[in-house]
Length: 305
Image (tube, rainbow, N blue to C red):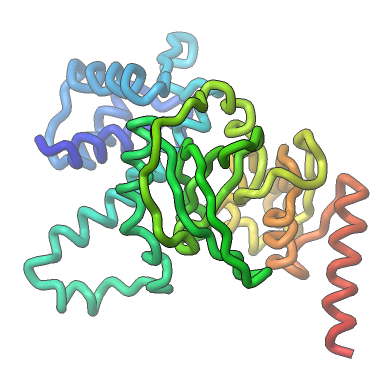
């Protein structure tokens, strides 16, 4: 079996358990068999669960009390990252299979914005630098300030947000991590071996799990509980594409609004997502965020007077 097919099967197992917590062994076996198009043995499932635990640090637990499986709460971050990677791999596999007649595939698959590929050819170099524990040197273009600046940095990871790719690392002489858009990087080169240890920056990297997007160097230092009232017809959009992994939706049938809660740092990107929902959302708490969104809406309205 190809590596891709095995990864896709493992991703399907994780997805089933994540979205159907408490799924029984028989139900899980049937679901995986339907996905693969062939019978799956209990032994194969146990091997897959072991692989998921040992290679991807995601622990799927069987509870005899409920006679079902669930994903350990501490592993939710790993689940999100793994499924996201498989999503990209799935698109790549589709494109690879279609190369024999790409003209026909191009009529079927349309990407919203071709600029998502800007700088993508540099990912290989960045990954190599991370794996070899080397620094990168490059010129970064600042669109807002219309400036260019040379950097030497230790790359720690690559992140994706809204179809854009970013490298996260520690600039030479700095103690705080920074994020650089790969599409704004030029003259990229691998330079000398780095003395920076990733383990010293795990806490900073962990901040990404507490925000929407990439900017955690603003506003509240700790996550807050955010409570929204969202128009019932808009809830399905949030269910299919959550704003954040902490999202929790409570809705009573035939009610006009549902309650949506988050536990996160309300940074700029999160506020923009709230503004996108305009009249479909009401911020209930915290009061400070409610007043800030109200002020932003009033400022926007003033531009039309």
